[in-house]
Image (cartoon, rainbow, N blue to C red):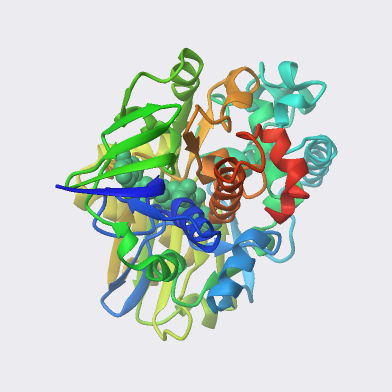
Length: 472
Ligand code: FDA
């Protein structure tokens, strides 16, 4: 067992923890990052599978994600555009397959009008919501009392329109059924992306990817931190007082003035706190839970759908694979599809024996793209729900009523203990961009506190002191 003395100890080497450590180091602070896994990157992770680059976790970047863009620019990392040429496919509830172009789903005129009405209402309210403090919206309490599912139905009695619009937040983002989270939580999701229209526009939200993969960003930051990143060191015990902390890893113990817990909130209770955290934190953390989604990867000899004039983009709000995209990596000649199976559908898939699961999923893809889709040479399912150090995907969100009641607590430090992760971000919430923004913001707060330029800053104080939040 080695004992180290540092200014700040960071628990978790995902994008948020690594960015925080990197910023602290640049500010002249000493750091140690303790990571549970045998790799960095957390929910970003890539592997070569039979010559194809597979991004098992986070991968896409949208134009508004300027926190992440500024980091990769600093690191000298480039991006490439997702393949977007060709027509899309829509699978209706009765299994009818329609090839279409443009942004509107090929549903009846009346349903398109209802969908546009719902999108307009989401955009109108989203514009009023501060992603850093959605609980301050004048109607926050009321909007947090009603499920997104039921709220949509108060605005429209067109079931198909409600399901199609609901999908973008429920299956598509929070990966929970729309009846389990509130309208306010849905508005936080859309305000974190600038608007609901941004979120429903796959060409915007799934715009570009990283040359060298998204995990490569964390690997590049970790390289700059060198020997200060310690893998295979889960922290299960944290002693703390106003004068500092001691974090206990497997073979490293770190004494520091401050700690950043850069793990998703559903894992905070894996750590035993001595003394216990205040009551409010204990309760708050129990209302933040992970969604569940299976990311499906299927690699083919060629991107055969392109020859048929198809983009590979397919939507089926009630299909097994609800979303499908061409995910061929930069410069590869094989064709890769990525699909998503969310919440209740994911439960159903995990009930099946492995071989049957593969069969059902490939048949689901073939319903969109024809029988060639059955001939995948690589078939892999990302299963972060089984990963001890994540336990779900993509990220955490509050249960009904939780965001208004507990949200204001989530970014407050407890003495020397600070929390940082994409789950706590406003802009970039649930995304790597949010992880980076939170890492920078938390580092800035700690520098101010340690240097005595200001006492431990409250959350609002940080915003005014360090300029507009979009710069953090
Ligand atoms: P993250 O979870 O990444 O890192 C936390 C780290 O803490 C992990 O390395 C973990 O092992 C470690 N840890 C946990 N407990 C510990 C303990 N007790 N001691 C020590 N270490 C501990 N985003 C995006 O921008 N574009 C996208 O396309 C996608 N797509 C996507 C797909 C899938 C399948 C997933 C799972 C996620 C995404 N995301 C995404 C989300 C994105 O990956 C996510 O928001 C960020 O990785 C979060 O970064 P953090 O650093 O906050 O947590």
